[in-house]
Length: 215
Image (cartoon, rainbow, N blue to C red; front, top):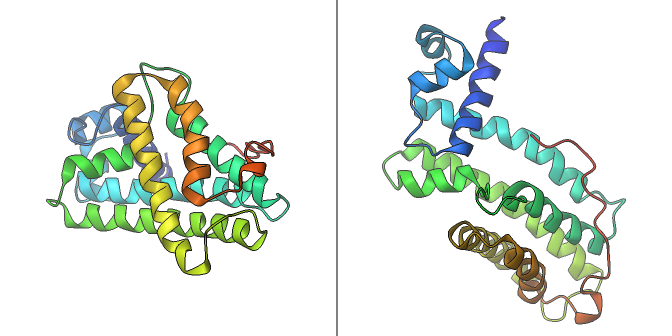
């Protein structure tokens, strides 16, 4: 296996393990065992688990960005983009198994780590900012298309943050209550209300995503 392949394998193995467990419970030994590499190989590529997590986060973002580019493609109407975004959350964050709601491993890791790992905190903040920019583009398209009741240009940045906060809260609630039916019912209406989508446009478009393979 080439050094590049080994590095990619470690990144993807770490993501999978953390996604199915949590950051604190996954150690370097387990990552190496699951990846089938030695600890020497691990430390050749990464100085610590924290560095691996930061690099894995960037690796994950490269794939998520492809999906977001597809979701917000100009070939889709603003309403289709909105429904695509909601569909993306259903598939990647909620799933179909009430006993295993995936949620966001990166968000969960940030909650576990707190302020102790500055580099990890900064990496997660960057991920959040990148996601918010896509949300801003989504809301701006709806605003320019006259689909929103109240929003103004100056509100877009705050709305984008509120979208992130609402989604994370809804997913966390589903993980605790193990009720994915409610979150799938409530999520669209909550988003519609939050962004001020005019009622005549609620559920008026069908999602056109997935249009690419998620990782």
